[in-house]
Length: 455
Ligand SMILES: Cc1ncc(C[n+]2csc(CCOP(=O)(O)OP(=O)(O)O)c2C)c(N)n1
Image (cartoon, rainbow, N blue to C red; front, top):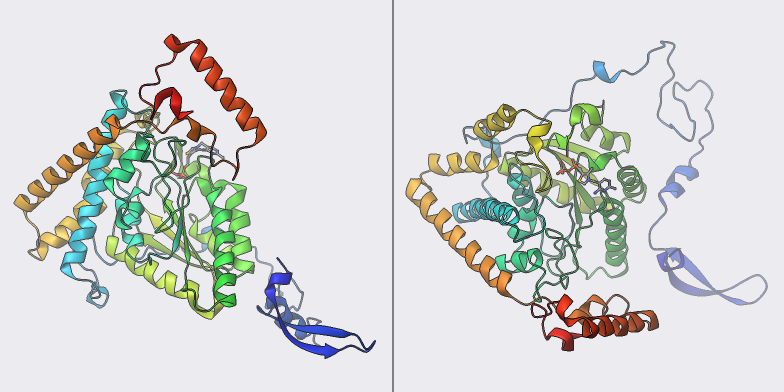
């Protein structure tokens, strides 16, 4: 890695008379600037010049910094819960009404798909599902600010990001039913989506693995752009829940992204719960945003129910992430997890039904944008009904097509794991074939493409 950071810049003759190549760094190490200044203490200075805290002032007042004495970080919003723009200076002027309506439809699509698929799981037609009710504004709103070339690492409650970036209902359904059209070859649990362009790395079940991966990918993008300025400037957008931010991976990722100045926008969905653990039991600090400051990362907290605010901060974060050679940004988007954690969870075992009903009624990113559209005369009851009907019909059509579709050929459980089939994999394929042929009455292979011949 280190040698690739240096570019050969010329030929010179060393003191021993041998020809040597001189090199210039592609990226000036940040430390070079720091070490070029003396960090020793200057006589009479009112500042500490310890290497670990170069700007700290001396004081004779003994005072412990107490989080409880510090104001909580404010929450940025553009539109209130009545769908009214709070400060006209921040009215969304850079988008057309049609675009805003398309965002609204994307939020509705995810919401309606969620309702249908949750029920499908209850009917035993699907093994598992997770909905994003209450958080559609964070996913769709942030995705509107990304370029198609940007790279996404997500957790699992961000279907709206895919929806906004052009993932089709057929692609959603093929993954959910693990059929032969699934880009992941039916190997993952439902909702573990992935896509090659616009690039979204496949979702991993182990929490937070995507956060250091995102920092590393952003570093790679930065080097790529430095080595070849013709490549488009790209960022990584990395989504995770506040619960995932309790993992060590979160801390390692933010620190490496800060010290290597990686162009990554971390988007934390703080929805109040990590399955059954409420935020009050998860941390004592000021949410997740305060941690960004600790790592030296520019940070903002935003109202996640306000799609305009989410879009605006993501747009600005993207711009900042690409400026001055790159840097990470942290966005903490506040919301409430309206749904159960997943189809495997009953949240009324650990929170009051009335709390959920209250949030559903009081505030919601879909209702908020609908009010804004209605206030502008762009939406009404009839349009709402017709749009919902149309989306429901389309989801159901893709649902039944995907459910009927064959599963991938059996050999695809083995191929593409390594570039070439290993000897062990070949042995296992043979053994599987032997078992399937010996006990045909035990295994129904009709649902797999090409049956036994698919092996
Ligand atoms: C390493 C690891 N530990 C635990 C789990 C089990 N688990 C799955 S989701 C989850 C809660 C995550 O909460 P949060 O990050 O806040 O996201 P949310 O579900 O609220 O959107 C837990 C503990 C896991 N998948 N991986």
